[in-house]
Image 1 (tube, rainbow, N blue to C red):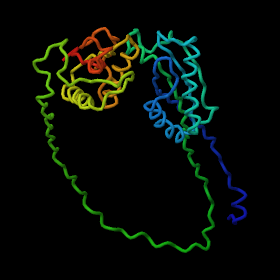
Image 2: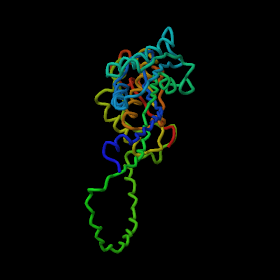
Image 3: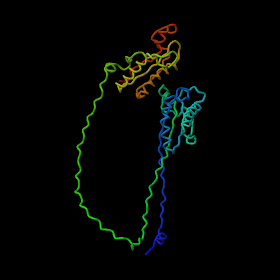
Image 4: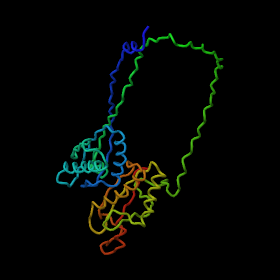
Length: 313
């Protein structure tokens, strides 16, 4: 017969060594820049803002921040411009509370392009900074407790009454629920005023004129209904693909004509129109709608425009 002290001396404690498995997961966030610029626009900042709380919640991660250029950069060194773009993202995340020691920065040239081609969309997609995120999430292995046998002194233990038998309930039959029939909701009807039925590829969409502030890629207030009308065409015709052509008045300015077309492109993409459905380009002042726009303010206003052409129905 063992007493309590003897039992304590004879107990054996067994410990398990638990191994922690580290699971690696990777994801990527991409932000884009204007030509020859390393300044983050509001859209890029919003994308980075959504990333910050995820990283703070994870705790264990590392970031590789790589900046890139397009094939037509005017910066003295494309690699330096790529580094400036990566550094802009680094500084923004640092100011939001992401530790510097979790981030590495690298500038790369256009030889590491995201997509091929020197068209405006290709250039825009290559003026980017990629944030490669590696998450390190611990997955602890649960330890299994090893039971230890105990020798119990039953001299003074009172007998336990035998368990009372209870009548078992009969098994309950499962209730089979008949499947619920789902009724498909028909798509909403297309507004006849925004239908492309009867239109031809290469034809311009019948929308109001989209005109711009002089010397700026800013749509005039009176042209906002035209943008809304274009957005309605794109929403009501989900297979429609278009080309946006930008123009300037008075003196040649290819960059401004492209910027005006891109302003309309950005408006559509921000309103959830798939970017693959839209192409854009600039034509400087080569195709005026009205002549003598240097001396006629009305002609100049008409020529500062973006036109919309059907590429695919």
